[in-house]
Image 1: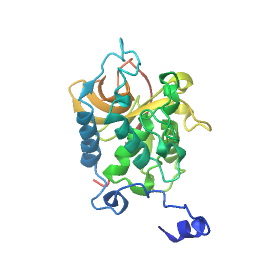
Image 2: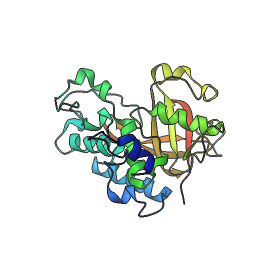
Image 3: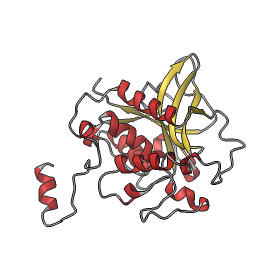
Amino acid sequence: MNKKTILLCLGVASCAAPDAHAPAFAQHDYAPFSRASAVAVAMDEWRLWGQRVDDDGGKGYVQTDATMAERQPGLWQRVGEYWWEGMNAGAPEAAWTGEHDARGQVFPVAVNGRYAWSAAFISYVMRIAGAGAAFPYAASHSAYINDAARAAAGQVADPLLVAEDPATYAPRLGDLLCYGRGRGRDLSFADLPTAYAFPGHCSIVVAGGDGVIAEIGGNVDDAVTLTHVKVNAAGIVDDPAEHWLAVLRVMYAR
């Protein structure tokens, strides 16, 4: 806990450092924050969830208690770990799981969207891989999309994320590939950063190949899921499946 944090915490019995929920190796830089580590963490989580692949946008998938992986024993707790370790200490979402609110009450499938955990998953991957305090951990993808856009505009000192235009930048392993959802589909890269939160989704690029890259995201079909994305000969995303908004270039130590 640094001096500034200590001063802010004086007289507050429950005050904790933002990374208080993180394991020691993530708090104290046991190893450099690397592209290989981030990809490996995401891949390990994908394997834990049964190596799901969705290349048709979830066609035919119906949300019910029985079909939602995030509500199954062992997996709802895993989502709870994404929230607990991915969010900064003190965030109300840190107490959520794949089916419980902050009071430990099971929420109905009908309001599942209020507890979407895809941004928590990315935050978890970055935290466990060693991103440290430089990553803007958040429950909403738009928080770190906007932070990366501000960095691209020169408004962030020593940024960990820099937004790139998906029309001109080829994603690399470990980068975050983001698209807009809902009213986020009305945005373009030129509109970033916004002064407001918007619906979106980001996944981490874990593999590349001839004409395709693979990305892993959380809360895709209510699971950790791999998706293939088409790219052109230059490696630029060329896939009409989503409204691609930005590629977040992650400034790994190696």
